[in-house]
Image (cartoon, rainbow, N blue to C red; front, side, top):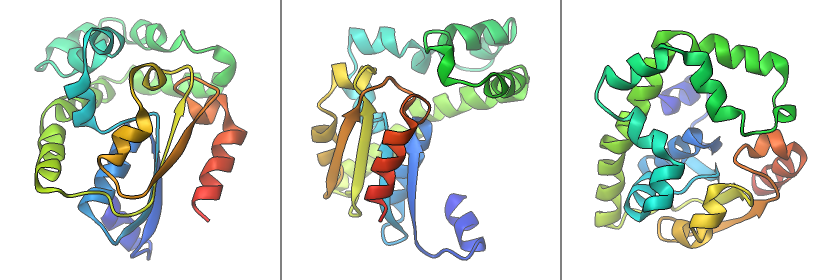
Length: 205
């Protein structure tokens, strides 16, 4: 879909950056469309298959929502929709509120109170635990790698820093990898906007 949108906008080639789920979309585009995606930046992620395969107790507890949201419908939807605002705040209140403007919080909550938003979120995690892993495994098994330059950024206070050698993981999937941790948690752009922008602009020159 993103490739079609960019073509409609007149771009036969482009660079892409994504955070969290957006990072997973970005690296899959680079794998699926070599030659179209010319540079890729991924923020606070490793490949989906790697996360599942390397997961242990810390991963299961820290990323419990990967498994909860991937359960068959309508289990997670019914539980979340019983009190969607509480569920959203429970996940985000661990992040200092200064990083999110009141308007941004209001927008998040408007979306999260919509049952269709919750359904879409759950479907996304179901795909992550199923077809996304299948696609990753197929590429790994056939030796398909990301050939464009890839920048990986992550937070020093986030879980990737504690669990993985992030650059080493990405070097198993891409031929030209660079990156570094920033002094923040999971929300790089909100917590360290200047440093995140500088790193992305330098990479995308």
